[in-house]
Amino acid sequence: MHSSARRPTQETARSALGHRDQYGADSPISVGAGPAGIAIAAMRAYVSNGQDNTISVIDLTTNTAIEPAIATGHTPLGIALTPDGSRAYATLFGDNRYRAKVG
Image (cartoon, rainbow, N blue to C red; front, side, top):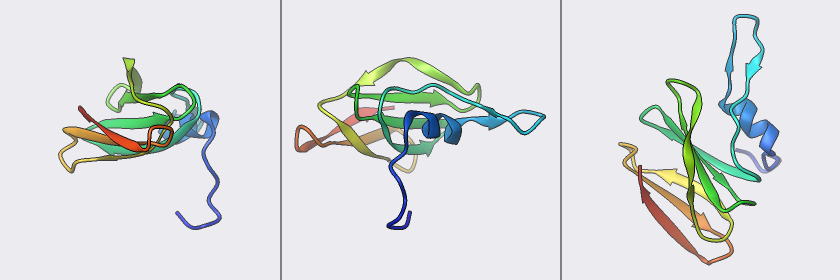
């Protein structure tokens, strides 16, 4: 992203994860409050939700959320995955640390 990129809102994160139907309309996928980052690997998308302290996991084969969301520490923002998608790492702004989660 370039420096003028805006922080995503819940609505834009849902649109980014959505797929287009036969008419070109987005089919949104709901995520948690305050989505801040997204990482994709192994047919799953991981969305860090800074306002509700969770990571939403989306199954990209069915375009549905896998419940429940993963609880994290305070304010997960950035998120990254290992190349094989087996581990997700989220920075926790409010805790000054990161958290690893097996996928």
